[in-house]
Image (cartoon, rainbow, N blue to C red; front, top):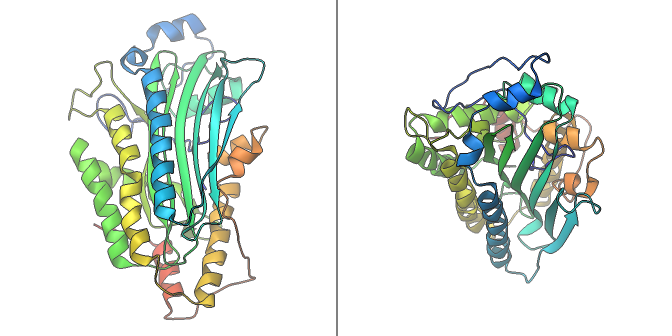
Length: 364
């Protein structure tokens, strides 16, 4: 899956080539600062948007959101199961390097496995990470590395014990370097069976959140979600999508000059809405009966979930190169099945799911 792990170089996951500029939400590829440009010049010409974004305040928001989601999830679970909380330091010898909090609930009656994580780190960009950021069009980045950064993220994944309840994945994050702040995040569903009403209600919820901030925003972020969560080797998408955004910049005045778009306010609203978009679906199905065949199908589809994480998720793949393994792999489903050439029966609900995953739909 895709949680917002912050890698050992401090970059939150889900790298993406789109850049959402302070002049409005749109695609805008920008030229990287050439390696010949002096680092002092890069810092000087960067915008002052970092001054408009309070990193400490966003860090508090991340931790408060994490704790609120954990409390609500424990209440929703209802079995008495509680989250295990594992706070870790990025570098025991450097208290300023940052920390993380990995919180996991396992073996619940509703939540077979749930992880809600927060990460707050600071450090120096490596050349490899700087070049990767530069290739995505981020302004103010020296491709040689060496610039200080700060990153904060909250991410979650809920794997339900019920095949009629979709897997939920979501995150919100902030990255700062060279005087510029970027926001990212999203929320998406990975169902095992298609419920038209559930899909429509989920997407309608997020469209309403987007419409509150900018007309047309939902369509843009829904398309980006469909593009990102795709398994090319299978020719299918991981789920039915939702929202996905990265490199969304907050202007020096906190909003764009066109459309009044405030990336920070939008990101905070995404975090606020995560559970509200999913809980009605969970409550609707949690007491319904299901068969062994449906449970087996759920485990087979979880295999696709893990395939995406390990083969295509940029953040997971980057983190596997020396990152904190338990935090990286915490998003994996608790049980998975692989079956050779598992093809659903023609006309079955299983085939209906695969058909939808091969061709994303507009749900609202």
